[in-house]
Image 1 (spheres, one colour):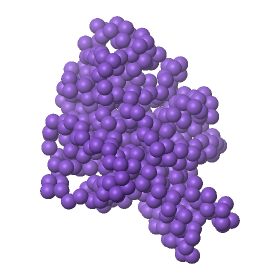
Image 2 (cartoon, rainbow, N blue to C red; image 1 turned 180 degrees about the horizontal axis):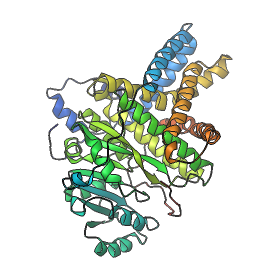
Image 3 (cartoon, rainbow, N blue to C red; image 1 turned 60 degrees about the vertical axis):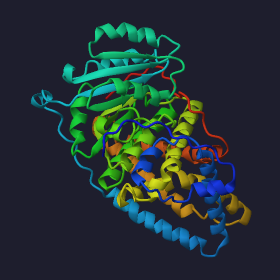
Length: 473
């Protein structure tokens, strides 16, 4: 795990023919695999559209073929049985208990931390976050705060300049209009000027607890923990159906995070509340400026570079839930595309088992449930209607729904000690959350299809934050 300078994106021009597309998917035999691996970290967006089109074609063709062969149903049922066994193994895994927070004595030698915030037009929330981050229960000489104003056109720059003299551990960076790189570019600029041995990243709407650093830093043991993700929670769960659904969805995500790590799978970064060891960040090349989801991309590169990612259940980092269906669609489409992109970018290193057997199997398992199955449901429905047959993928879909429901209710139970509510409330939250999560069956096929035709422009994309939420821990 060497500590190397950050590489620049490699050129990879577009190829036009189908033969070039197939050739791009053939496993290479490089003379220096490690050097090629590191250069592939920043290959850019070239080829993603063709790879997405190829993947979509393969998924549809396989579903059509399984409907046409007599043994198709038996194959699906056999695959379902294998997934049931794996899911049971996942459910019965025992996560490690949370480590004790740093004591007063340990704080004297606490590790240095640099807290990074990339902000663009965040006048409604930025002052609240800066006040909280600059006043954490942690030695002032052991951490600093870096806020990057990425050419905001509202009052964000003025607010930050007003706050700067109030805190001696606060540093402000103003980026020009043509700085480039989006959020990743802003974070790379800030981390290059900061000095902390650990880097934390927060969204501008984050709400944090004073003891956050004291609780997160012990999670970086053993030394192969390259990053830690803090549990995210919705600050406005009672606003409407959408925010209540996101509350249950985040409980589901935190549950799976813990179970996957406990069973030898991968932990994932979620952007807001992510902590990264500087050595690990440098080792895998910093934040990728050629992706629309910097956190999901960094997750893969850390694991491919032989680092592990931990998870911190308490305290949670609160953030605003999206309150409107249209805004939710845009946010989830971006998440879906960014999550899918990383498989297209790093597929060779995944199938070469660079992460290790347990992580590779875990990754492929969740790739199937999160990305393939929702997309495969469309050709399955077409063949079902055309042939007047039963849905071929019904057993797999049933397993996914049951598995998700169990995970959601167990995730809600884990955080129930910090939340009010009785058993009836818990059941209602689970049912409502499961109804809410069905939107992925629309988002994923739509996003996968669109990626086959065109990909999103690489630009600063953010969810509008209103700042009018009352937060409870």
